[in-house]
Image (spheres, protein in one colour):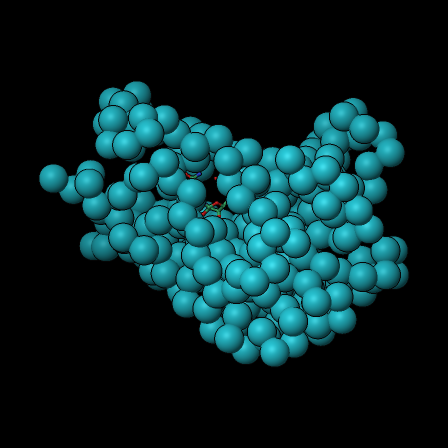
Length: 255
Ligand code: NAD
């Protein structure tokens, strides 16, 4: 679909060892990019790297496990990528954690942990990438969620942080459009990854029935949208929040 579109381009993806991020890593590599993907743990990164080398031993791919909120680690990471490949064209802030805890049971530690991964990491990773992206007229793609648009019945920090990601996307888009850097986000609906794997069958069926297209999204559905937004076909798109959700609205589940 995006054949050779990303030849010579360098893509950095957080949360790249599994789920949506891993599908994006595979997609960008298959279409010519060099990819640095970030994982929460070194072991999961190494496992994902081995799987990619199985697909194609010639893929130009590296992995790192860093604290996404650590400003020094972000700076070091980008220096390493530049030393290896000389440029950064695309940053995908994709790492994220869900939270279903009801407000009255929600601890401050959980609030902070969700805010750190879903929101502060987007700020930190974007801040230190922007000078490199200005040089390549590159782009940032953030993974938000339909929960950030419509909210969701339980788990306040998740919709709150995803709404923040949408606002941060628009804010960065305004700020850096004059520099030729585009910033967009994707709001997935329900996607069949580890994030929703623990859902009991009855809940899966209820959600599935509430999706107009009557299926969960596949990680590749979101990866394809990421590649579209990173491609030259999207060269006039910035500040957008692209819903990729089969028509799903979480508020349908409330009644
Ligand atoms: P996933 O749980 O399979 O992947 C989440 C990724 O984030 C993993 O690679 C994980 O290692 C990484 N991550 C989590 N905590 C981290 C931390 N503290 N430090 C570094 N990395 C960390 O789920 P997924 O569905 O692939 O999620 C990817 C993105 O899509 C997330 O931002 C998620 O909020 C968003 N999303 C998912 C769905 C869905 O239904 N699956 C819906 C809407 C949005």
